[in-house]
Image: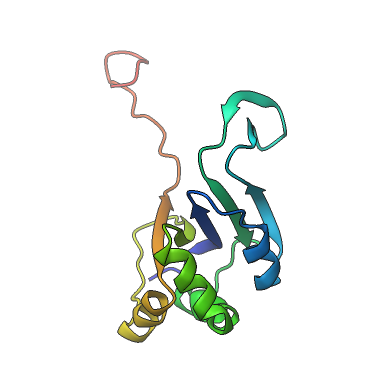
Length: 149
C-alpha cells in the first residue's frame, strides 16, 4: 500500500474562554487564533462582518509528511501529555479539542490506529477530524461530443 501525505494540526474551540492562555501554556506555534467577540475576518485579514461566537486556536506541526500518521499523532500526544489536566478541564467546561488531519492520497490507501493510540487521545479528550483529499479526477468526455457526461 502506498504511503500518503498527512498534515496534522491541533484545533481547540471553547464557547467562552480566551484560549491564548491555553496556547501559551502548551508552548506550541499558533497558526490561527481568535476569541469570542472578535470581529470575523478571512485568513488574510479582510473583514467579513459579524463577531466570532466561540474562541478558537489552531496549532500546526509542520508541513505535510509521509511519516505514518499514527507515528505523527503519537509524537504530538507526548508533547500534550504533560498538559492532561488543563486539556481535560477545557473539555469538561464545553471546549472541543481535535486533531485535524488533512490526508492527501493518490490512490486507495489506509492506516490502522491501535487501541493504545486511541486510548491516549481519549484520555486527553482529543477527537479526530479526518479530511481526505483524493486527487482531482478529470471529467469523462462523451463519445457523441466534447461535453462532460
